[in-house]
Figure 1 (cartoon, rainbow, N blue to C red):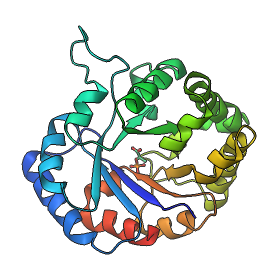
Figure 2: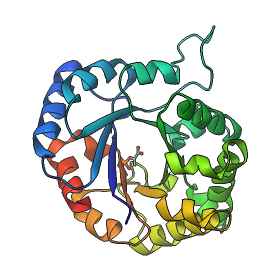
Figure 3: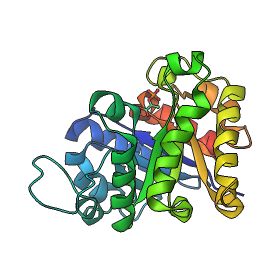
Figure 4: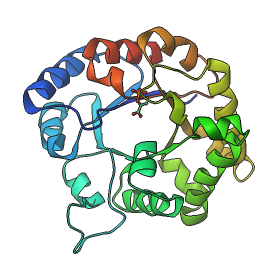
Length: 249
Ligand code: PEP
C-alpha cells in the first residue's frame, strides 16, 4: 500500500506575512492525517518554511534546482543549498519550467540526478499539452519525459522519487482530467516502469496535478494508480489544501 502524498506548489506567490498565516494554518490542520503533506514555496521563503514547520508532520521543498553542484551560475540554487534548508522534496520538470524556460528532458534528468545526490526526493513532473493529447501522443510524450530520467539515473532511482502526472491543459485552467483519464495515464506510467522493474513500479508514488480542488479530489484520489496530488492554486488557500489532504488521508 503506497502512502498518499499531497504537495503544494505555491509557484511565485506569497509574502512573509501571507506565508506565516498559510503555514500556521496548515501546520495546525494536519495533525492526525495519515498521508504525507508537503509545501513548495519560492526559494526565499524556504527558511521561513523550515523555521515554521520543523518538527511538524509537514515537509517542505523547492520548485526547481540547479543541475550543477556549485560554481559560477548566477541566480541558480544547488541541491545542497536546498538540503541546508531542510528541504525533503524538489519539483523537477514542471511544465512551466519546460515551456517558459526551455528545460529539456535531458536537463530535467540532470536536475533529478542533482537532487538525489543531495539526498532530496525529486518530484518529476510529466504531462502532455492539449495539442499532444488531441494528436494521440499522450503516452509518447509522458514516456519520453520519464525515459529520459530512467536512462540518465537508472530505474532504481525511481525508488527515491515521486512522479507527478500533470496534463498541461489542466494546470491552472480549472479543467481537470477526468478520473478515468488520470487513471489511464497513471496506469500507463506504472506499466512502463513495471516493464523494467516490477518492484519499483509497485512502490512508485504517482501524483496527479491539474486543477485539483476539494470537490474533485475524492474521485481522482480514489483511482488505484493515483497516489495523491500536486496542488497549485488550491494550495494557497489553507482550508482548500487541508480539505484535499483529508481526502488523501
Ligand atoms: C501546478 O502548478 O503544478 C498545478 C497543478 O496547478 P493547479 O492546481 O493550479 O492546476
